[in-house]
Length: 530
Image 1 (cartoon, rainbow, N blue to C red):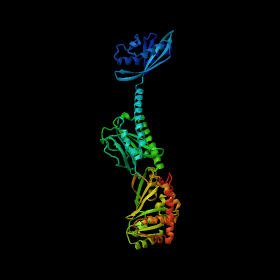
Image 2 (cartoon, rainbow, N blue to C red; image 1 turned 90 degrees about the vertical axis):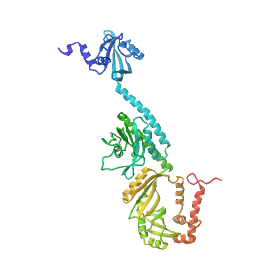
Image 3 (cartoon, helix red, strand yellow; image 1 turned 45 degrees about the horizontal axis):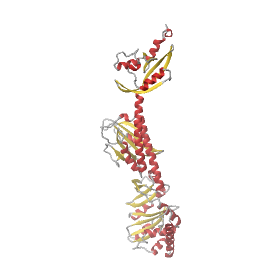
């Protein structure tokens, strides 16, 4: 006989027994008339002697006795509603669980019945609880980080303080931030918090021949990385020295668009912390910090509130300044520098050597034209026009040359840029074109006040070349000093003009400078209101 010809009730019971649910069928009076295997197994686990509970009033059978459940079931049996759904916790022999009760009616032979199904939703509830706890932590972190970003006046402050905020989160034992140096040879630690022996300012090697640490890999790949680590040395090593107990490390690059500002790293002693949502949260935090650093950088660009100084040094045989040093064998520095259409105009101070000897050696150099020499006490000022290839390569970059000197045959140049992003561009250009130059130092520093630059630009644009030369030579030779050692005749001779012509150029330059100074406006030096 086929199953199609048999009684359908045993087939239905068998089907109900296969469902991973606790199901009870109750009549219109709320009495249990049928249960499935899931119900019976659960009841047996709770120590009920008759797990099937056929004939037992539902609310006397260990079911939900709260008012909401009772009323919901009664409304369904009475035909007042088609469905009742209720979620509730339950203490079981295996611990606390969560269930969703779903009650739906059906009619058989004009009698109303209800199917009560209990669905285990413990995993979902736990995920919701973790998510809610995560949201609470996120809210606190976002608030604290937003306050940090709004109050910081340079990126290093943000990167130094960020780890201390992160380790306030339960489960986060160590936090750290770092960034690559411009030469991409080391990772510089900016901030740390928690039980770690590494401190801010320490560096970690960036050796491409070795297996990268999680932090290095995250920086190189631009993607978050989460790994199990073992500080004891028996397993994978953490990126930085940390104290036990530590079990997991996550490293997230701090980025905004295509710019990487650094690395955010966290160590935890709780494996559950690093769920997918947790990684997304840390990535979102890193993105928030990256956006804040980009905004901070933009504010600095507009206000001139900070800068980055880069010092390069090395032997550049093609530089005429090196040729001058080779001829003189005397260290010297450039005290003034003016761009020209072709090349630059330098005023060089040579502290030692006799004037006649310096004069002879300078005039013998073919790479230098328009040579002007002035004897000022114990030193000699040399005014020259020449094309210096190192300076020419820097000109397209947004950099201010703060210092330019030759010491022991090595060129030393200090440049000021407005941001680390510009510092990267300058570094790449200089080292690509001049492999002999290496980065000696990089440091955050205060540049000239933003109000000075428009004033200086206006002055420079008004002065003729001769007026500019006259005022610069007079300034650097000590002509305006109370105990001057040089007179107008000497300066006029250096410029190859008459004394009267020199003073005409000098007075014209002074008139333009004082006129601009005492005119005053919002961009320049304001006139005092007497």
